[in-house]
Image (cartoon, one colour):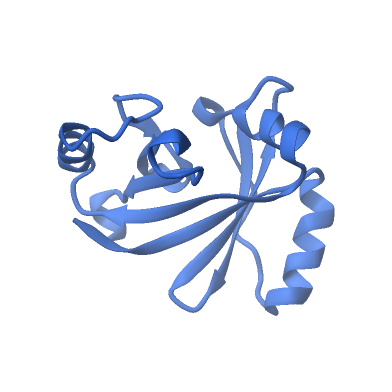
Length: 137
C-alpha cells in the first residue's frame, strides 16, 4: 500500500528565514513557494535523495500548522507516504480502526490528493498519505 516516504513536513515560523537555513543545510535549491488554500499553508520543498523536506508555514492564525507552532514550536510536523490509490488507503486503514482527520481527501501541494491520520491513532505522529497526479508518477 505504501510506495515510499514522500516527504517530512517541518513547521516553521518564518518561511523566508527557513528557506535560507535549509538551502545552506541541504545544499539544494527549494521549490517555488506554493500556497495551499485548503490546508491554510505556504510550502516549499527541498530534495534530499529520494525524500523531500517540506517547509510549512501557516497562512492563517487558526490553521493547523499555526496552531501546531503555537503549541509545540517549530519542528517536525508530519511524515508523508506516497500511495498509489488514496481512496483505497483511506478505506483500508479506516476499516482497521485507524481514524483520519477528514475521511475525504483534500488538495495538497503540487496537485496531490492528501489525507491525514489523526495522531491519536498512531501514538502521537501525524501521518499524511499523498497520491500524486498521474502525470507526476
